[in-house]
Image 1 (cartoon, one colour):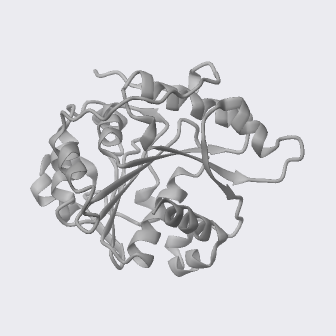
Image 2 (image 1 turned 120 degrees about the horizontal axis):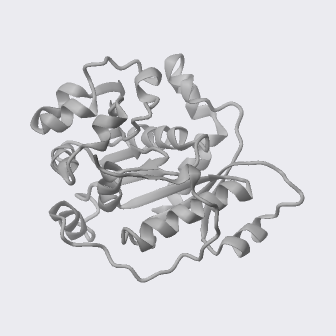
Amino acid sequence: MKTSINFKDQNLFISKVLDGYKPNNANNLYIDNQKDENNSGNKKYIFSVVSNKGGVGKTSIAIALGMFFSQKIKKRTLLLELDSSPGDFGIIFDIERDKSLELALKFPENYNKFIKNINKNMDVLKGISNPLIAENINKGIINTLIDYILKEYKYIIVDTQTVINGLVLDVLRLSNKIFTVSEYTLESIARVSSLVSMLEKKFSIPTSKIRLIINKKKFLPFFRVYDIARIINVPIYTFIKFDRKFNKSKFLFNKNNIFNTKFLREISRMLLKEG
C-alpha cells in the first residue's frame, strides 16, 4: 500500500519558507499551460485549496472560488473534490453514489457522465469516498483526467483533504495557485507553516504558487496581525473575517444567498487583487 503524510500527529513547528524552486517541467500538461502564459484568453487555470488542519474552511473557500468564476466571471468552472475522508460534496450538492472521481479516473474520456451541474457554468465532481481506494490510485493517473477536463472548462477548483497523498500531490504540482488555509490562531498557523515547508522542501512545489489565507479572523487584542507575519516568516496573502451568515449548506436551500455574504465579497476582492 502506498504511504501518505498525515500532519495531524506531527509535532508543530514554525519554519521559514525559502524561495528559489522552479516548476518541474516533466509534466506535459503543466508545460502546455505555461505556454499560454502570454495568452490569458486561452489559458486554463487550476486553483487548489489545501490545509493540514481540519475545520479551517477549505470547502467553503473552494465553493466561494467556484461561485466567483462561474457566476461573476461567467466562465465554465468545475469543483473537484480530492477528499476521501469522506468529503462533503456528496451531501452538500446531493450527488448520487454512481457519480464520483473513482469512475471518472477509470473512464476519463467519459468523465462528463460522472459530474453534476449545480448552477449555471458550475459543475461538481465528487471525490472518492473510500480512503483505501484513493490511497492506491497510481501516480499520475489523474493527469489524463485533468487534460480532458481542461478541454471543456476554464477553471478547476480543487478541494483537498488534511491527509496529503499521491493523488493530492499530483494535482498540487499541476496547480497554477495553491491557497493554503489557516485559522487565526498560532496553533493553526504553525501547522500550515509546516505544511508549506514540507511541500517546498520534500516535494519541490514552488512557494511562488502558494498563497496563505487566514480565515475566520476575529478581534483578539493580544494577537496582532504584524506579530503573526513576523513570527512565522510566511507571507500572509489575505485575511477573511469570520462571517456567521456564510454557510456551505446554503447550497441545499438558497444558493443565491451566498452572494449576499461578506465571505464571498472578500474572496472576490482577493481574486481581483490577484488579477
